[in-house]
Structures are given as C-alpha cells and as structure tokens.
Image (cartoon, rainbow, N blue to C red; front, side):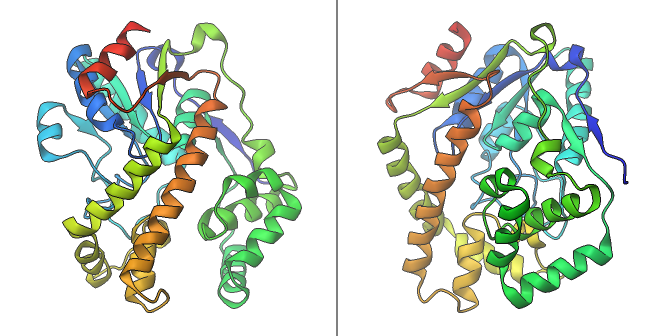
Length: 318
C-alpha cells in the first residue's frame, strides 16, 4: 500500500510565530500590517490564491503601499497555470519563517485559508504519490458526467471530506477519491491531526470575528469595487496568456464566475457579480467554521467600527 506521512513545522520555530486569521473582507490585511509594524514582524501570507502572479484584484492582495511598509512572503510566487499542494505551502512557509527569524524578525501569518492554518499548526498529511492513470479516469468522468457526480461519489466514501469541499473543486475532490482508492481509508480520517501538546503550540493565534450582517455587506461592496477596478480585464489577460490558468486558479472565487460569463455559461455580468457575492458570503461562513473548530485560535470579536490600529492593539492586549 502506498506510503503516507505527516509533515510538521518544528515546534521551536512554530512557537516564534504569530497568526492573524479571519474571514474574507473583515479587514485583517490592514490590521496585520499595523500589527507587524508593532511586533517587528514580516508577514507570511496565509492565502491559497495570493500565491499567484497576475491575480491581484480578485484576490485582494496587499497593496503596494502595504507591501512597502512591511515585507510580505508567499505573495506572487506562482504562475496561474501551476498547482500548489498544502504540503508544498507548508515547506515554503517554513523556509520563509526560517529566513525571517535568522534576521531577528518575527513571522506573522495573515490570511484566511483555514486549510493552510491547520496545516501550519498541526501538520500536513502527505499521501501517496499521484496515480496518473486513476486521475485521468476520474478527470474524464468529471468531464462526461459532471463535477457533481464525482462529489456524490466522495460523499459515499468520505462524507467529511465532501462537506469541506465545494462540489466544483474538482482537483481536490479527485485527490480525495484517489487517496481512498489507493489506501482504502478516507482522506479526512488520515488528515485528522489533533492539536499539538500545549508546550509545542504557538501562544499567539487569533482570528477576527466580525458581525455577520456587517461582513456580508462588506463582501457585497468589495465585489462591486473589484469589478469597477478591472476584475473583468484582469481575467481576460489571464485567459489570453501563453499558458492558460490551471484548474486551481480557474476555480478561484471571482475569476471562476467571470470566466463562466466570458465563455457564455452565465448570461450577464450582473448575474456573475451576484453569484460572486453569494458564493463569497458562503465561503466566509465556512471560514468561520474552520477557525471556530481550531482550539488553538482565540477569537477577537469586533463590531466593524474599529480602525486597523485599534484591531492590532486589541490583538496585542489579549
């Protein structure tokens, strides 16, 4: 049976790190910059999409000014046609943290990708190597029968993994089915790493917990602003590139819906914008679940009226 291993951050390095997570559009990027300045920290992006070059508007990357104020790591390190596993992220993040600490600085993770946060805190399951024959068969099934059919198969063998994945996240659905077929055990079962012993955990792991109504209004306005700032044109440039975006980049919130509109699967730009807003609100709800379920994370309740400086001060006072 193919080998599976767990990859973990060294405890001595992990305990030197700070973390500021939170749902999309809650203001964590601006608060993280202020917090980094006060800590003497450099930011490690905890985001699966800001890794990609050329995907700036739709991923709400830190601005040029924010990156000038504080050095950022793991932003703009991949081309949109490339894929990147959680284990690869963990290795890159560890290298960044080692570099930061060697220079006497503090690593501060800022972002909203719960899978990455759990991986850094608890370790990452590195499963069996890809079985390309099996993957090609599953990819053919996805094309012929639809992504929903593959998701239904996953529900049958690994309902927990299925609940955590969007039905159209075909790449990860296929990986979960592949792991089950190759090992005979559900991926979710093998990924279940509990929290480390208290002595090995970082002390400073926080997530911003905003009011839902306020957050949803912020999400809707931000999506409208992204379109006004050129999300459609940015997506067109990605599609026109010599190497088209890969499956991961094409599935990114905002880009997927604009691509579907440009390619005729959504009838109007207004309908695409409405769909982005709805899916982003749903995504924010899933992010809340991720952070609540990690006992290492301490919530920082917010009203929505706080400035970035006030949020940073609140984090430092916990």
